[in-house]
Image (tube, rainbow, N blue to C red):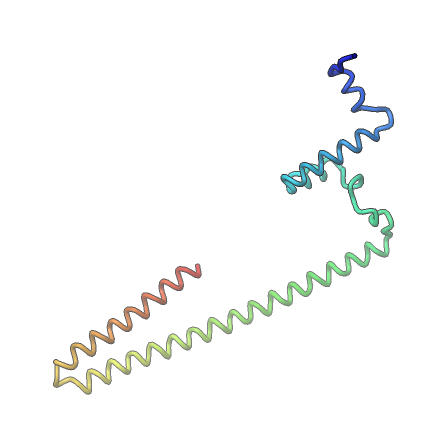
Length: 153
């Protein structure tokens, strides 16, 4: 029996027909793409293996197909732009609405404090616990609002 050495295995890999090389490259690329697909795609792009492992329909594409793809890509970009513009408009309306709600809440709290102060100005046994409770309510609201704002950022 004859032992295979490194030179004989190298000659088998670099066969004259190139078929073995192609099969081995495909197998290596499949293994690489299973483990790290981003590395495999970068490697294929750098080495120009895209044609060897690409979709068989790519060979049937002509200039009309490419023009159609470019038109579809341009239409897609236009729709994305319109969607982004609409989204920005909606967020602007939402911010304006939120400012109005916060202002209305602020005015309501100020009016409630003024009402309690005016109504119970002569009875401190009611005024002090009422203002303390209202202060706790406002403090809890502001704390919760700040915590929620921090979570969203």
